[in-house]
Image (cartoon, rainbow, N blue to C red; front, side, top):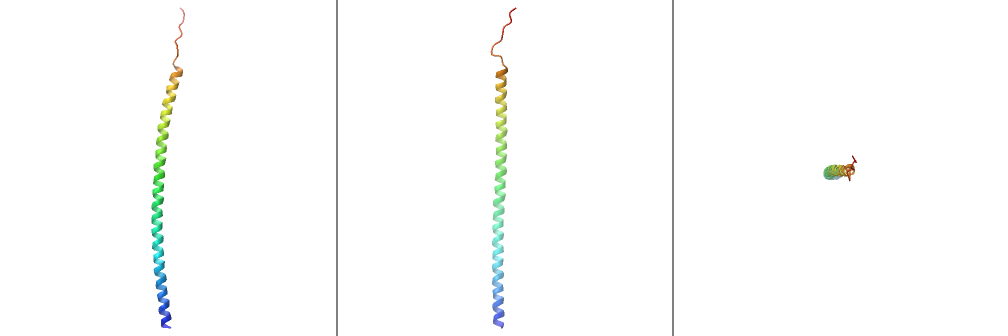
Length: 84
């Protein structure tokens, strides 16, 4: 009877140690995945900022181009002379 109780106690200790190892492994995995997720969100934010900056520059260039075209259209090619 005492041997059986000792064996049961040893099995419980082994099971608890395995549970502790499993919990520690899961914590490490979660920490790693959290870091990956944080890095991914940071990269997305950087790329969004870059897109906004490029679109802003493109819009500015487009406005300048349109302004130049409007000036060309509004500028008379020849000046009509009015007979006096």
